[in-house]
Image 1 (cartoon, rainbow, N blue to C red):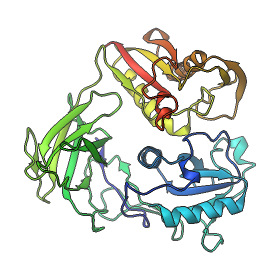
Image 2 (image 1 turned 60 degrees about the vertical axis):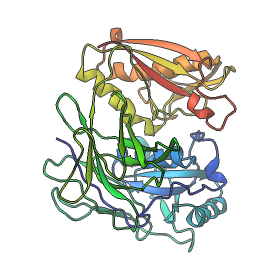
Image 3 (image 1 turned 45 degrees about the vertical axis):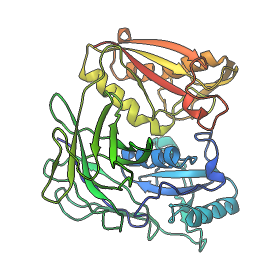
Length: 419
């Protein structure tokens, strides 16, 4: 059984959702076609799901150009917001992020990222982490792991340049730890307990808290750990708590912040309000958006941060052999243009290392993007007769193609045909 324990990577302790990214960081997300020599890094993570969450916060909540790649020299996932061949530009941007955003420990990495195959690793130089203030080398990354069940925290240090994160471990005896709550954050302690309805096994995910009076999202919180939820300070103090984990039906719980009551809600010995969310798998007729699947520009290939959600779809299909799905592909706009596709017989779905380039319609691109997910499922044991493809191009946008949220039009949806 998975339980959750988290550690604080010293540095960024609290997150301000109102922090504004700098000019370079506000570019349209997921537009890097290849990495340059200097990368502006805002976090380093041992576990991919933590890098995914951190990237989701920076790109989704703060509208930054955040992505991540494995650093083969550090064996850590580096989350970065700028890639350039100009050292001065990288140093300047890192300094701005330190002073103008919540990422006060931003640094610059000079070296190769994302090359993890044996042939590439033989040609990868060691790489250097640079403190943008002193412009000197930071040194090697040191990793310290606490044995399972220990009450101490785990930490990854870049000799003083680090960031905050949460980790998930397979540890049947560990309990949620509130090691990051002593940061002066105001609010009531909550634990959003996510589990599967059929067997009550824990499920990883997040919960959005909505101020019901003002109809606005207050914040997004990690599940299965102790968090502090701020008082909405509204007339009624009513809030809605919404959990939408891919592969499961959306669940919403409404309650009063001051006097939280409802089925299964209780207060534990530490004074934390425990709010259970029992999640039910998707059923016939349901359509779920793969919010955390991202594509390279003009390509059917997925960004590395897409692996976790694609893996969730694979788990869902393996869990229930009766599932049959239709994969819907969508683009932003209907213009024809360049299409980058994987080379013949390539099994690399998450990089641009082995590709072919052509031209085609928006519908063709949306079809290629749906097919890449189907092909990944095929390569991992899912039968072809369980999957269908539907390409829409730009015919079904969720936002105007020129709006600030137009990137959300680029998406894949999974329709359940049989369960």
